[in-house]
Image 1 (cartoon, rainbow, N blue to C red):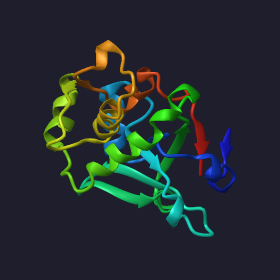
Image 2 (cartoon, rainbow, N blue to C red):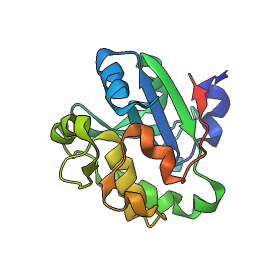
Image 3 (cartoon, helix red, strand yellow):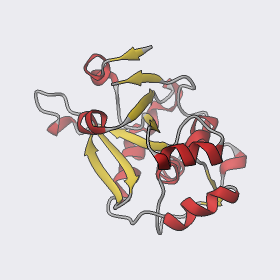
Amino acid sequence: MTILYENVRDIIQTGDLLQWRSATALGWLIRKFSKAKDNHTGGAVLFKEYQGKERRRFTLEALEHGYVLNLLSRRLGSHKGECYWHALKPEFRIFRVPIGIEMLKFCGVPYDYGSLFRQVFGHVSANARNLFCSEAIYLACRDAGCPIPDEWITTAPQPGDMTALRLWDEIGVKIK
């Protein structure tokens, strides 16, 4: 089922997970090698003072030019593919502000092309010198104090692994 973004915009909050399935050659390659449904990860962020009458939501994500902030509506409008919103589970809502703080710390960090290509052979260790998409959201959650399962303490999850962290609803809502 697909839900229009305007119908869920007001309930998307900081710390929610955005999982992307791109209809591009790179998206297809990432899904093929990772054997996952999703090839890209972003995090939702809300700036209450600046949402305006449009009730704007933003996404922080690692893209080809580094870790950047984008209007979620603009990304949804220009994205070739699908986006699934996974709400942060109720028991982890206390981490929303710390997750947002940690995500914002990464703005401007370069994209981690080296790790992107090394993931063809398996998972890579997580660090914040350079970031790929799911690594950034994982590190923000870890550094915000979210409980991380032992198997992910030092390993960066790939986009298809993100729900294995058990912080968000496992089933996403397809938004457009």
